[in-house]
Length: 223
Ligand SMILES: Cc1ncc(COP(=O)(O)OP(=O)(O)O)c(N)n1
Ligand SMILES: Cc1ncsc1CCOP(=O)(O)O
Ligand SMILES: [Mg+2]
Image (tube, rainbow, N blue to C red):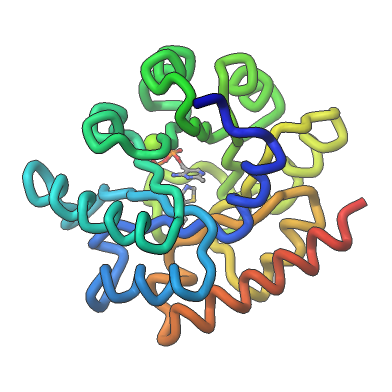
């Protein structure tokens, strides 16, 4: 196995669905399956916050979601928990600035996908040096999903990265909906990562399709 190419990574970032059991009002597996059928390109298991599963229950839920991902050929990324990712032989890990050091995680993951959150040019450059395959930028818009989210930045940080020659695949996160997704990709993001937009949608499949179309329009309008 070798590291994922930037082109392949960009394709996977188009509609990146992130979910944990506490983000759902209905059966999470049903929501995920509907979303996968409609064309989610990448999935992140993020089981954290109020009411999140722990221990065995977390492990079994992760296994069920990973199984579903395999059925629909959607790569399975684990948020924060590097040991869980290795135990499950997941496709990758996403870590932030306050998580285990990216350099160390890259060594543990070998060629698996490594996503790193960045909030400015310096953090993005450091993440690239440490072996990230993509960078998550946000919160782009206000979100109530992450209590400890940093300041809302709009599309400014994405634009700064592109203006400074950053070519690593980028995905925006935070408060993203089909209505604002186009502007994020137009600014230089390769796709959108969303929790609520899909997990709370009355029609997850309809929402995925709308996000997909908005992303394609935004990419077509990139400078
Ligand atoms: C794609 C993507 N981008 C950013 C994040 C946020 O990661 P982090 O800052 O570590 O915060 P938590 O998600 O761990 O609360 C993400 N998860 N995914
Ligand atoms: C995990 C995370 N990191 C920055 S904002 C955010 C939450 C995104 O959730 P939503 O798509 O519901 O705004
Ligand atoms: Mg984290």
